[in-house]
Length: 128
Image 1 (tube, rainbow, N blue to C red):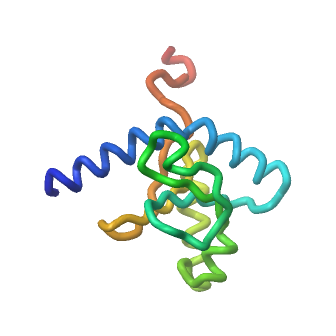
Image 2 (image 1 turned 45 degrees about the horizontal axis):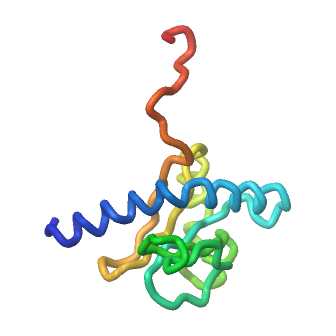
Image 3 (image 1 turned 120 degrees about the vertical axis):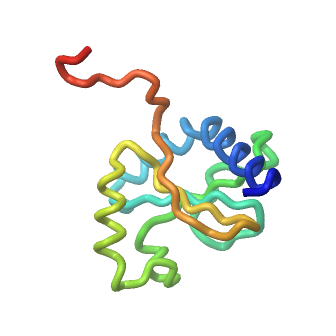
C-alpha cells in the first residue's frame, strides 16, 4: 500500500470517528421510523445522486461527505444484485454493533463495517 493510500485510510478513520455520533443518530431515526432494516451510509468526496445527505465535508472540517441510504436503494441501482441480497443481509446482521459504510474514492468503492462506538472496554460476562 502506498503512503498516499495509507494516509487516505487514516483520514477516513479519523473522519468516521468524528462523524460517529451523527451517523448513530441517523441510523436510530431510520430504524425507529422503519424506513429500512438495513441502513447503509455512503462516504464520498465527489457529487453523488444517491441517498440523503447527512454530513457535508466542507461544513465539518472533514474530507468526507456522508449520505444515508438503504439496501433497497442499492438493489434498485444494481450495486447489490438480487442474487446477493440474502448473503449481504447475513454479513450485515453479523456486524450488529457496526455501521455499514460504502466508501467511494479514487481507490475504488467498497463496503466496510465500522464500530458504532469505541470498544476499548467491553463486558465479557464473568471475566470482568
